[in-house]
Amino acid sequence: MEARSAAVRARGTAGGGGREGWAGHAESRVRAAGHRASTARSRVIELLGEQECVLTARDIADRLRGEGVGVATVYRALELLEGLGLIQRLDVGEGTARYEPALPSGEHHHHLVCDTCGRVSAFADPQLERAIARVAGRLDYRVGAHDVILRGECPSCST
Amino acid sequence: MEARSAAVRARGTAGGGGREGWAGHAESRVRAAGHRASTARSRVIELLGEQECVLTARDIADRLRGEGVGVATVYRALELLEGLGLIQRLDVGEGTARYEPALPSGEHHHHLVCDTCGRVSAFADPQLERAIARVAGRLDYRVGAHDVILRGECPSCST
DNA sequence: CTGAGTGCAAACAGTTTGCATTACT
DNA sequence: AGTAATGCAAACTGTTTGCACTCAG
Image 1 (cartoon, chains in turn green, purple, red, brown):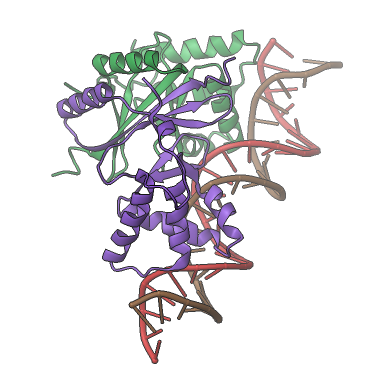
Image 2 (tube, chains in turn green, cyan, brown, red; image 1 turned 135 degrees about the vertical axis):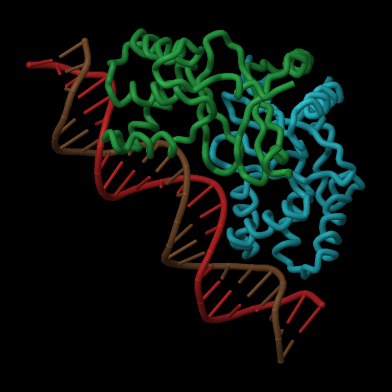
């Protein structure tokens, strides 16, 4: 079995991959929610859409600073996108939040964090999802979402 | 099925519950690792042992300030205890880490976070553990630990 | 005595917020 | 023109660190 995220290509604006679709989708949802189409926010969406793996706010801010986009704007954009359910925040515990596009299909994955290099990768497993759904049903709790984080050593660090 | 943590009573220094055992265990492990038995650190351990649910560093610092224990010491104690595997850090994403005793038996649970009141509770589920073990085995990754967080609305908030 | 451990305060990192300015609509 | 959105810088929050002092061994 393989870590799913690796299968998603980061392709700039060219290809027809799933993420390009996401950026467009996000843009129109933001529009539909009554927000203006500002360039700064579009850059943030674009960047998130191009990326195959999770990005920190700092990653985004650093790469957009050259284009005159400020940190505050990045955070505000992320806040908006998260509020609309267009991105998902991931907290692996090093004090820095990471963000990734939430696919409209609802299809999602979970994360592997390397204790050595800190890199975050992704995996998906339907049986795990089923186990979670089952336990969520048992509990006296209205469960709406879930995160699973596996920690250990990635292949390149364990050599 | 029930949220397990609720079954663990917080009983001060009186009873024979599992956590009292933990405090003693932790204290001797710290000793064995070559550290002195300072009062401040003992207070932190004691407090963690009495508590039935996760505590933030601030919770601990606030409650120990009266006894002259400083914030830095709390963080240093938590760092040490985590390094020895005696406590487990939990990050639910609001920027504040939470800590709870790690039982020597290796027995552990996962957490429910209420999106409304922010309260954190616990649950355990052997089948979920099995599902995680299975997926961990499949992946090309040396998985050493895992966290599962379910988010939603707790019974008292969903009324 | 000696140094591990401490408390305080200053330093830090990530994130949020106030406000004057910019630029979609 | 009107106002959402921005950029900057200052404010905040949680955590870490430098340093002189204390107390367990």
